[in-house]
Image (tube, rainbow, N blue to C red; front, top):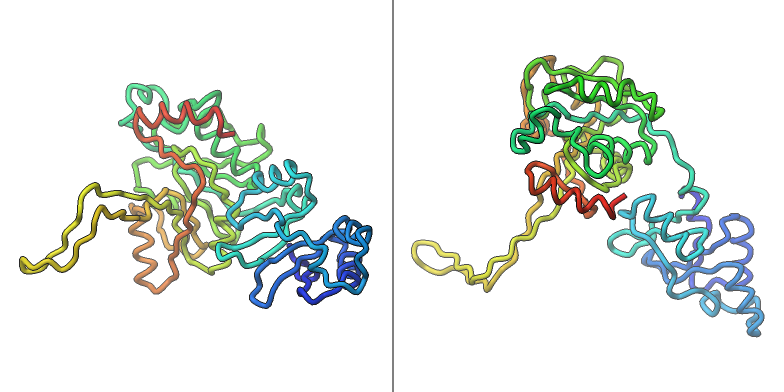
Length: 349
C-alpha cells in the first residue's frame, strides 16, 4: 500500500492523464479523490476502453468514464475478508477507507496474498484451573478443551499463524503436560513454542516477568488462551504502533438497553429524565499489546494483574490506549459459553 498515492487523480484530470498514471504506476487502477481526501471513483483500463468506444475523447474529464460506485474495504477488514471480496467480485485491487470515508490506501491482490513473517512475540496465558467448566476440566486444562475438531488453544494459534506470527510463548500451571504433549516445540506447525511455567499463579500479568531475556525489541501480544475469536491481530498491532502506545487493550462495545425511563436527581430534585436509554460500555477482551519497556517493567515472580500493570504505566505518564474490535469474540468461561462455541465453530473458520 506504500505507492497508492501515485495513482490519485483529481476530478479535473483527463482520460489521457489517467492512462499515463495507470501505465507508470503499474497498479492497473487510478483513484479519483476530491480536495477533502474522499474517494469519488476509480478508473481502470477497461473503464477507459469502454469510454472511448462510446465516443469519449482523450481530453474529456476522467469523471466521464470512472466507476462512481467502486467496491471498497475498511481498515478493519481482515486479510481473509479482503481476499474473499476480491475473489467474489473478480478484482485485482481495493481502495481502503477509514471510518470517515477518507481514502487511506490501496490493497492489491498481490499484496494481500503475500504473507509477511512477523517476529513479534505472542504470549498466551493457558495456566488457569477452569473451575467454572468442571467436570470438563477435571482432567484437561481449559484451553485444551475441544471446540469442534481441535482444542480452543490450537484454533487461536492457527489464527496467529495465518497472519504470519511464528514466535509463541505459552504460560502454564494446571496440567501443563497436556499442552506440552499436544504442541511440543511447535515444529509440527512450523513455529517456535516456548513454555513459561508458573509454579504458583502470578496473576494475569505476572508471567511476563518469567519470559526469557533477549526477546525481539518489538511489541508483544498477550492474551488469554480460553478465547474463540476472529480478531485480526495484525490490525491490532498496526493500531498500537501507529498510535505509539506503550500498551493497548483490545476492547469490545457492549450495549445495555433500559426498558424504563431513567430519572436522575440531586437533593430530591429531578435533574434529567431519559426515556428507555441505551448505555454503551467498552469491555476488556483479555487481549493486549505491550511495548518491550512495559514487559520489562514486570519483575521475576512479581504477582500482578494486567489492569494493575496498565494503571501503573499510566501513572508513569505512558500512553495506554484501546483498540475497539467488532470481530467475533467469545470468552469461554462457563458451560453455556462452551456450548455456544460448539455451535459457532461450524461457520467460523
